[in-house]
Image (tube, rainbow over all chains, first blue to last red; front, side, top):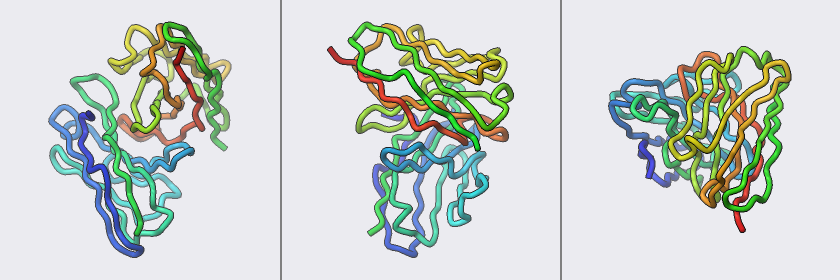
Length: 110
Length: 121
C-alpha cells in the first residue's frame, strides 16, 4: 500500500479532459514538490511534470500539473489514444527520508 | 544524446548477490545525482536508492537498507548497485534514473531501459 494514493484507473474518450489525483500528507506532498510520470509497458518511464507544474522540454502542453496542500493533480486535455498508459506521482517524504511513488493509475482511452 | 544503459541482471537464488551497473553517456555524469528505481512484475514503481554527484549523500528505501549498496565512479561514468541477501520480493526490473537538474527531488528526467533481476530457486 503506497503512501501516496492514486485512483487505480481512469478513462476518457478522445478529445476529453481527464484528471488524475494524488493524495499524500504533511511529510510528503505538503512540504515537497510533486512529479508525474507516464509509463508504457516495456519502456522506460517518462517524466511528464516536475516541481508541481513544470513540463520538461518535449512534453506537450496538453499535460499540466497542480498542487494544493496535501494533494496534487495531473490533467490531460485533448485526450489521445497514445495517452493510454500508467501514470505515477512521486515526491520526497521527509519522514521516510526517501522518494515515494503513488500506486499508479491506469488510463484507458475509450 | 543522453543514454543510460543498465547491465548485470539475471537469475539468482535467494540469499545470493548480484551487482548491477549503469553506463552513462551524453552528459556530464559527475554533475548529476542518480537513482535506482525498480518495478516488480505486475506492481508499480518503487524507488530503491539515491546518490549525490559527489557520493557525499546516499539514501535507501527501507526495503533494501542494509542489503543494497549504491556507488558511482565519475571517472568511468558509471553507477552501480550491489545487491546482497537477495529475496524473492527483490524480483523486478531495475532502472537507473538521472535527477532532473532543477527538480528538488523525485524528478527523474532520463531513465535506462532496465535490467531484469529474478530471485528464485
